[in-house]
Image (cartoon, rainbow, N blue to C red; front, side, top):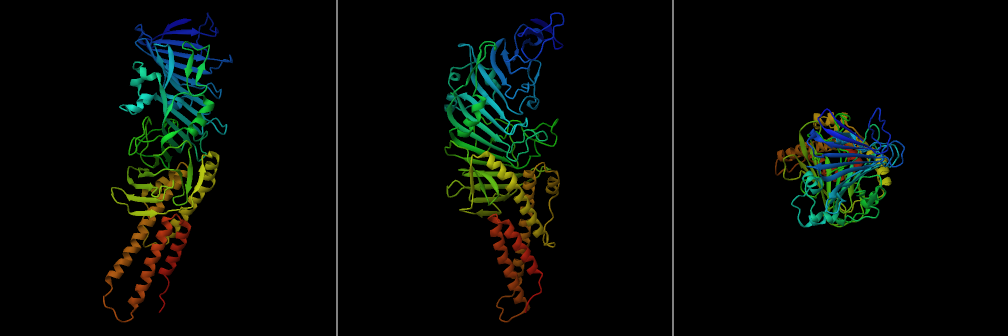
Length: 534
């Protein structure tokens, strides 16, 4: 053991657990040593940072950071090095040092928190227990992430602190009797669907489930005893190898589904130092404290350009389907959804889309489109009995279909439709500068597709309005009581055909039959400029 006072005035005891410290040149290491820190040297313990090398290879396999208040042990941040890369918590001054991007959220990894029970001298699960990261393709970067919220079962009877699992006031506070019976009452489950998670785009999650239930924190294998750990030697967490299966089958009373379509330029929630062009969170995809409130969801949350869907009924399987109407993946059983659109390369809001399952068959059949600051939709699409494709929870099939079919086809159809609209040179609206800039700056095929969707909607909305207004103006100008054939009568037939054709195009467009709508637009363009027939 050695004692030293560092530059902060902290007194630190360093316990050489593996006996490899040279007495003539005492230098601590980070494989089996323990650091006990007294901040400011005031005589009270503040932190205990412990490294454990289970196999003696000179590389730590576990970490624990115990937090004290006035020398009373309160809680413990722990980590298991699952993939053996020797990387766990990033520390500074003998405690976790933000940002977590410098800690291990990559590959196969796990962190978790335990609360100290002083009466029993034991650990109980609390807060993020665990946060587990899964490298499905073995490239050293995570494709799935699971986060359990451990809170007392009594929380369900009194939600005065709706984000209990993220409250440091609770962690530093006293141990209450209600903490003897803990529950896993929220699970957040994130996925990398577009397959971009890797060295160039770490932590690239698009799709997330937020699960609310009543499950007690009682799992096979959750007690982890280690003789090398300082007492209490048994810590509690869901085993890494079981966490995904539990997330896939968790009995959820309600489910929130989130899909990141584009980043939100109004906030900065990512890692600007290392990933300046990306605003992704290491934790996966959050739910939001708005509209449908779901406890212990955490934060920070993204408001704009992230699709939210809500299922209020029980499920013990995460099920996803594809809708050909909007060409997107959706949560099976969701009764409602929304996405706020805007804040893309500027602070300008654009509008909102809302989705509903009106016939309660588990699939969306109504889409409402709103302009910004509008209380009524400018367009409603009602498409019952669409040819939806069920994928259930076959994550490999979902990812493959999304990457290889959904995105390329949606991008192709958008470009095809925009080309058809552009042919109406005297009627087509100018494209907003922020959308053009966003298309150039798109960080992924998902973002490119989303921006093209918005450009297509903008182009069609304005073209349809212009052509309908022109036709209405023509009919309003026609004389009443006309009794003879004139060239104006012939023109009225041409205009009427155009108006009825527009209604048919709008119907195909609403049903998601974009290719057919684009072809009809091309035909309409040719007819509008054809010479009139006598």
